[in-house]
Image (cartoon, rainbow, N blue to C red; front, side):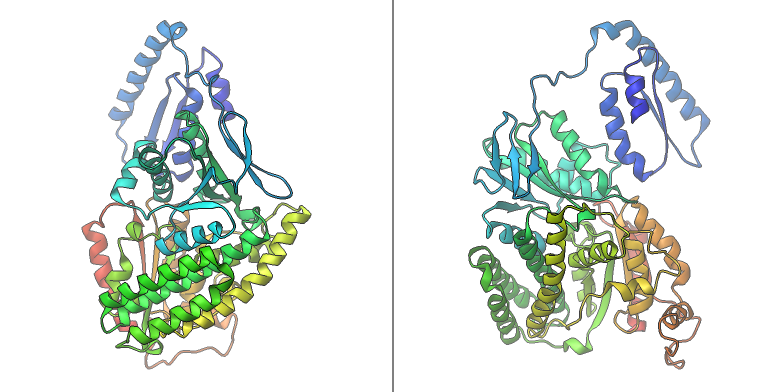
Length: 529
């Protein structure tokens, strides 16, 4: 990027950006690179093992012609003038966050003139998280789940090479601004950011550049950092956020359980939706009554939704991988409904699991959070409360009869994968492989590793996990932690595979080959069950 700026400012230099097919980092950098270049032409060559020389030569010749023509008229060409535009932004002090508008007006984020847009990471999570924010005085609006329409909006303002979660997040923002925004409210788009081997760190950069490019006034990004454990809006925000995320995680399990186990699944989902809306309203209006609301929810579900299969006799599939697409039904094409028809409960990896994971990394000093006293205090309060809230919420919702109580424990998962993926390699791969080696057979009949098309962590997970998906490798990983571990040899022999399927999604319907692999996976999971 620094070199790009030097080239932009030197009239004799022109850039060639050489990339390889489906390169994750370049998919984000190219947008910034072209923004820096402005009207100055540049050549991008995307190469793979099958690129023909003739095609490359043609593109080089074409770019040279364009550069020659540009040099003749360069004195009459100018970049977009942003002198009349000031971009809005969010800033924090030791007490709260503020929205600084394009005209310089500075107001608290809790001001009714500020709308905080919550991107969807599953319909239940976005709704409850927004309700929790509204209970604290923030005007939070949940964005809908992905759709073909939202994806079109995202693709219209991107190169199309970025990963699906970004396209859906940006699409939901642009869809809202063009169809629902009155142009008067201040818009704060909630987004998280993290360093490491995922494109997530560039999401806020991309969105800010998009806002600038379109000269959108009074639209800003509200960014919370992965490395801070998502602290930043105060202890109260953390407490409500934890309550709502854990609740949505477990309720998603209950919904999948109703789809697979209820005598009348459609009627059961109808009752579930009614009771869920009731809980959301209580979280918004009287959040201190959340535990009573959840207790009433469990009683109603148990009474009105009879099951044909008891929860202790249920068959489970673990849906793991990239945190956004595994929670967004449009992204994974409603795999929960598909497997429910075969009698399997699809258990999406929790959003709260990632928060527990981040706190585990901070505790192991593998992340470097901001060390201010305020942030440290927030983290300590949140971690202590998170464990209490998890225990209480899960105990209450287990009474519904559609959820089996279990605590989220990060350390055992990573202990079963660290001999292959070191703890220092942060992200989903260690968790996915850990669950596959630690909890299949005992808990899951199979693992689906889901990610956006071209997702680096998803592909890394697949490459290191596939060779390990044998019973003998599972036994080896378990014995590293428990030397006495064994499986009944009459049922499980060393040559038997653990059902494991990687799916990459780009928002379109699955191609025929993925459909065939899903059918095979279902047969393997049935055998494992």
